[in-house]
Image (cartoon, rainbow, N blue to C red):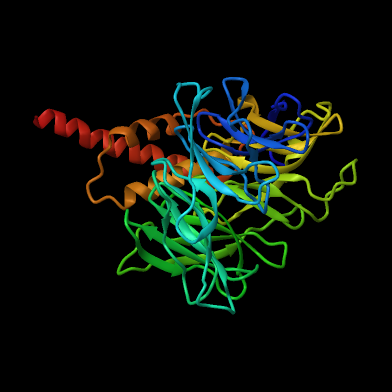
Length: 436
């Protein structure tokens, strides 16, 4: 059983609403999601500084077709999808905050390209680049008159990047800060999934990530090195992490491994997010028994191995106050500080939740192992590392007071390696200062 504990907060609903769902969170703990506002209409919200802000203009409704969940980047920009009530046209949007706390901002309708009848915005990176799809007509192809094309939006008019393969639907689902995005290719799930590099004008590199066993749904891609992509095969109750080298060579990414995540709590029914430390959240099924009879409790998967593919999953319902009144049904987002958002039942109402780690019960084994492994791996690749910020981070980690309950030999080994590395870099710096 993990020792990590969380405080759970109800994010509430927008005026007139009775239900809400949180779908994403950034490292500033700004949360994005949706809430009904009455009359069967849904609006996108931004939760910031304890306030729930409606960022959907009057006369518009949030589209919940498929999985059109709003997404947020580190600057508080939001993308999502909307449609006017009683209208059939879906278009994506990008919302940019105009105040530091994100409680006011400007919204852009992404709109359509010539020949497109709908646009979909699925994810946004820290540069404000939005990825998604365009539903485009093919008048010269009676067998397949309408297809999805890859869409990129940086402002102004959306960019149609076409398809991968002949007459195959292609839709960009998620993007990282390096402009690398995952594309689902195919008419219906299970999809072939490609990782692509956008160079500001076109796709400069593309590689198929999936094999026959892993075709399914593209969930997310992180900013780590190596890059980890989260895939859920269809059908099945497995979650795969597929790792690739950070940067492509000769127009291709090198696939390093495809690894299913092990779990002692049963099948990881669905995954929704993966942070840069390799933690995964979602909803599970299997040998878990909940008082409500719900078969899909929210989980967190914590890595503990060197390559980030060894670890275990934990039912988040066992990691909050049992008297809280919450049933956590689905975890949909996790930031790099370990805060988790999603949806659950609170007083028999569907509500968005925010989980904040209780630092007095922090699972320092997993956190320490993940962070030190990532930093050591980064430094090992640099021929002459600039020790500035990395040295400060390593000093903080190496001096971290470990709990007396920690028995993880790998974590202790990494701690010793970090201390040695800090000492080596500090000695090099002192010699530089002395010679200067």
